[in-house]
Structures are given as structure tokens and as C-alpha cells.
Length: 236
Image 1 (cartoon, rainbow, N blue to C red):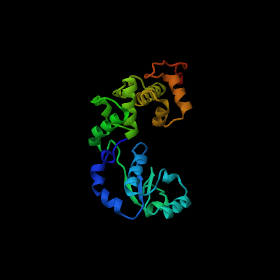
Image 2: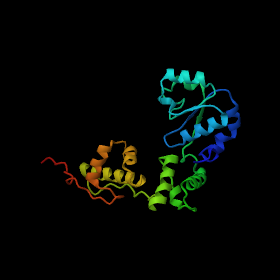
Image 3: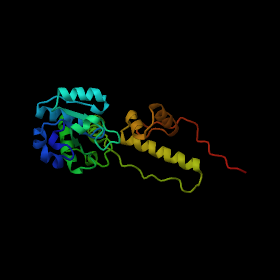
């Protein structure tokens, strides 16, 4: 578990932590997936001595109002903040606290990796590649990197440059090459985890398997099994 003081951005928002904890209002902690929201609200609620609610942005307005009446000093966690186009009404009764991403606070990477190494019982020092940016999955991505290093000895690989076959103007050929490069990049960044790769690409699991059939999987070493691409026929 990463200590609260080691979370990305703590050097900024943590300066007012004691004042924040002493306030009577509920706290609305938010950040993107993998930013450590669930961990942060548990720690803040423990220090405040109040209950917490995770995934508060998924609760109905009536449920939030009932919960806040019962726990006026509680701590809520969510992936939506006050700048969301349609924030939950209850958020305006809370003190908002946004958790930073790893990319926003790269100075926090060493302490985060060290804490994860202790948690997962991985010997230090860790390979520098584990702290490579960008880190799209934030703390969850760092956890997965350390775990895969422990179990498989795998460190993140550098992404090959995205270069289309410019020697041809054929649209089908260029789109096919771009599709392959994006698929292979997602598979490498997720260490072959197909559920994570589908999330990165914004496709369903079924669509991902169709793409792998067409282009192969560089992490697992599987070759394409789908028929070759049929190029668009030019008009005579």
C-alpha cells in the first residue's frame, strides 16, 4: 500500500491536509481510474475518524443525500469532480480534493515504486524502466509493472515509432498498418493483459480478439491467423 504522503501531488495538496481534516464538511476525493482514490479515502476517513463511501458518483442523488445526512463529516471517493459537465448535486456540499496522476507528478515515482516493492516483497533496486513515463494506468499501472517484474522478469519496452508505409498511397494498406501498430503498442504496454489492452484501445474483448487474429500478438508470440488483407480495388 502506498502511504498517503507518497501519492502523486501530495507535496502540493498535502500542505493543507491537517486543515482539511479539521473542517466539518464532507470531503469529495476524485481522480481518474488507477489514481489511488479508494486507498486515499480509506486513509483520510481513518485519520478523520469518519466513515467513507467509494464510487460515490455511481450512487443516486437520494442515496448520497441520505448518506451525507447520516455522516456529515464523511469521506467520499469518485472519478468525477466538480468540473464534470453534470456533477452529482451532493458534490457542492463537499470539499473537493483531486488526486494527481503519475504523469503530473513524476517526482513521486521513486517513492511509489519503493512502496509497491515493499508491499509485493520485491528486492530493490528496481529497473529504471519500471518508472518510465507515460504511465496511462497511474498507480495501478505501476503496481502491475512491479508485479510482472517479480513474476515474469518483464520490464516495459519502448514503443516503436508509429510510421505508416508512406511508399504507397493505398488507404487500406496504411489503415491496416496503423491498426497493427496501435494494437501491438497496447499489448506491449499492458504486458499482454488482453482485458487491459481492450480498455486502452476502447474496444470490446471480442473486437480485440478479432484484431489479434488479424495482426498477431507480439507479447505472446502468436502469429496472425486471419486471411490477408484484401486491398481496395482501383477503378479501371
